[in-house]
Image (tube, rainbow, N blue to C red; front, side):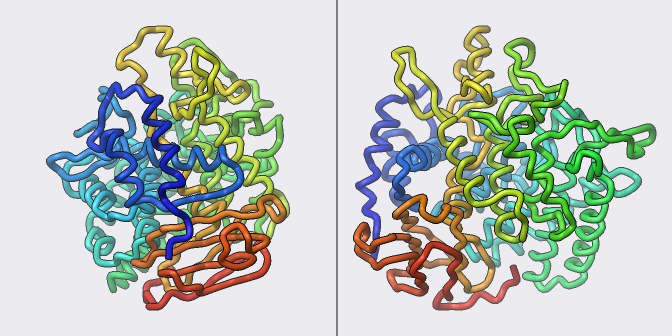
Length: 508
């Protein structure tokens, strides 16, 4: 039983194709896009047609970045070749985002090939910061394919140890150059950054889980201890008590830990992406800055640096990629994933579902560009002006006639569809046979929504909310279906779970 008919959403793809200028044709051409997407993506329906349109737009653009190579399928960041990319135009900077988004594709070959490329087939795995073990564990939580992820355990362990050798300071924290975090021209600069340390914590936790799954208890315990130690270091050393925020600290002589950079940056929310901060220790106060207009809140934000800082700026001079103020989809999607995790786990009163919903709306509305005729078209690019929605790098590169032409068009550097699926609709992937749904749609906001055609642990899943029962004709309230069978129901919008037909014995 399929609740949503695919042909009802075909018009989005036809419109994207009609208005597209294919400067860099991809392996799956526009003419093939609908057939590919119809087979591979979850379908989404809601009353907010902007959120809905951008959902299909982002799948349409993601499809452009699937490339077939002699090493198998890879996912690119830019469509045109760029000189700082590696083999097959791959860049590991946003590859973690690629896995979080791509895990919802029905055909697993794309993520399987992509993982093998990074770990076994010549990918430049540590050119930029990259949370590959965490990304693969979260891919497993959707697919349930234990054999694939455990097969890569030796390579994941070796990669972690290489990071320790290359980037770990004497006190145990990791350091990184801001440009190699993919965040050049940042307000806080290089040093012991919340980003790289959160990524390494996330990878240590993931390796622990994968090792348990593989029956490698000694490896699991080793990485459990690494994760615990790094969590304590981040909480003790990167939490600025005066600012009530996770901040970068400078790297001093002989790699020693220096002072705080004393500026709040959006990367201070990154620890929650990996569920690093321990609950009930007061760290959630940091989130009060997200919705503050002197902090990070902006009409097309969030900003990457707090607006009250003297280091905050929006500039149309110099380097086109700036992380000292402009809004970046990369950072916004990290922050929204982190926020969903906070709302999932924590009993706090700093942010709520309405805040998540508002930020997702802002994010969706930012993904447009105004044509010379004045029409608004869906668009995703590099950095944007958080007050006007103008795409900064796009404008500067056009003014400078800089090649390659339209470098940032359809930029694959962030997530959006995963934010709708795992955040807004609230499908929280697990390793066991429990289907857990925690919608972040505020009560009373929407009378209906549906996520259908989701391939989850080998089953086809559908989640629908229908306030009256008349919109979809499948009953009133929130419902979860597995392979056409109703497995859970509640009359109101809220948390709901149900069991799948067959259990998966892995741990979460």
